[in-house]
Length: 155
Image (cartoon, rainbow, N blue to C red; front, side, top):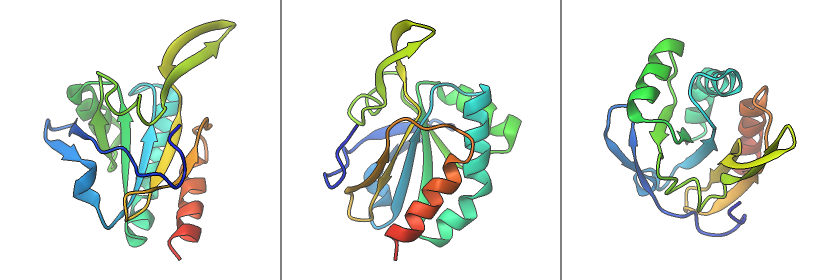
């Protein structure tokens, strides 16, 4: 994972409409980057719905919520439409952001090891620094925990 207190690695990725979105576009705002394995899977859907449900509260604290996975822009568009998601989803099939942020890593499942996206979150300060990290998270209730951390940090 990226280290707290360091500069957040810059990036540009495409959103669900194919528009390029860059981290620098959000300078001056808090940025919640949540990394997830796959659109339309149970945990990822739950997490995206919870972040969307709390998005207004994040906005009121000057934050933008961005979900990043290796899925395509088209997959993100279907995911957003199917579940009425409001958070920004970015496509990273080449792992240009997943790797430097430490979300693409060796995972163990049922005794087998393989590379994959570890559900994790990074809170980036308005100055572009890593303010907080969550290395391995459970989807249920995670958005609320991030919101609470943001409330403390944004004071």
